[in-house]
Image 1 (tube, one colour):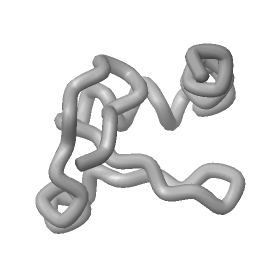
Image 2 (image 1 turned 30 degrees about the horizontal axis):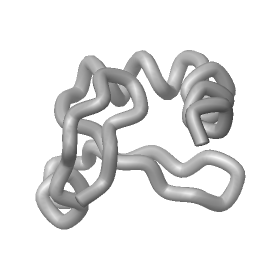
Image 3 (image 1 turned 60 degrees about the horizontal axis):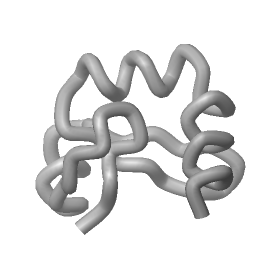
Image 4 (image 1 turned 90 degrees about the vertical axis):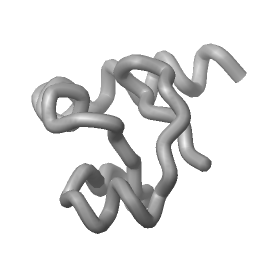
Length: 56
């Protein structure tokens, strides 16, 4: 399971990939629960990647 960086929901990677709900950024693939979350990430990926890094 992967975490949707936009809403925090747990996402099944194969299901998200089959629905086209993935984005690549700086060599990593990110998975999303919905088209809305994917769209938000795609508009400003660094915002969400930075938040993830800060939370670690």
